[in-house]
Image (cartoon, rainbow, N blue to C red; front, side, top):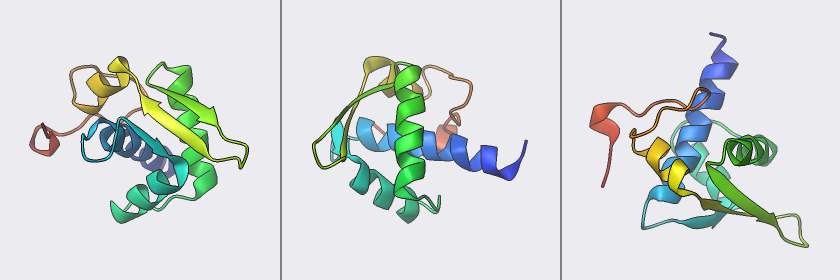
Length: 103
């Protein structure tokens, strides 16, 4: 698998895990999600995060609304929360390692 695909799968998981985390989610804007991806070592531009969010919505893992400013407000779905915690496996989203799961 190309390294860019690996980063994409990790970025998607980081977004889902952030939204599933009660301290952050269930909703968050794309600017904060970009910061979170970068803080977790998955270097991401805001455009890459928006692309990931669009893909995640196509998989019914998140829903998002675009504000007049162009900011995305992203909300995790039940299916997305299940993927974030490893209950559900979704091709294209990195599966969390058992030691990485949080409650």
